[in-house]
Figure 1 (cartoon, one colour):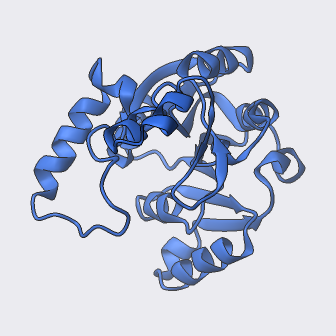
Figure 2 (cartoon, helix red, strand yellow; figure 1 turned 180 degrees about the horizontal axis):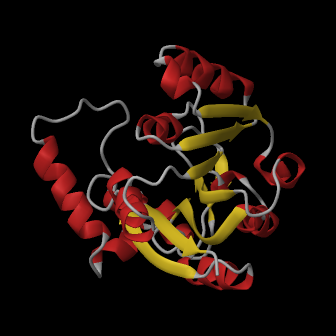
Figure 3 (cartoon, one colour; figure 1 turned 180 degrees about the vertical axis):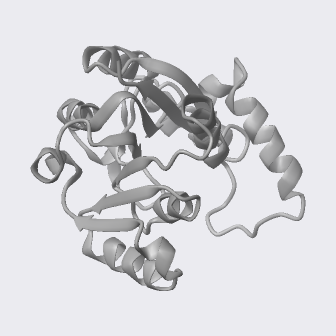
Length: 233
């Protein structure tokens, strides 16, 4: 997904431009810190106290120049309008968040308002069109059969969450003024890897296969996750 995001940024903005980035639901700040290291001005929003504490601890270990480029805000992602003016950001990230939100449309509309004209909205969501694949490959036939007719699922943390379908999000993005520009699959071939599995020695070829599959039909359509990139008109 990082490669996909970098591809979209490189294709949309001048080389060397310092971008204003908003990372909503940033977790421990992996993408926020990576983009700050690349020279961008990053604001991270996270409501979970444990997660934002971890992000602050990671940020404290960075050089001063990078720390100065990062602002952390403990808040709900649906409250961006309280903290920021419309059009304040060139890039807005919302990765791994929508599955925890019962009604995502208001959140997405708020994120779109944060974008400057031509700005990039990057979403990472659970693929509602492929929910049967993981249990099917595991031989869990009852769960696989039920997954064809629902957008609800239980994640690896044991939480009951929801997935999004590409067609639904395409319509939503068009309606909020940030129509879909391109989309990718994420975890096409590696979704069945065990939690906590060691990084394999052949990581390079693995990433090459995932990157290729993530932008190639029909493979991307059965990915566990979808990475959607909308552009503010």
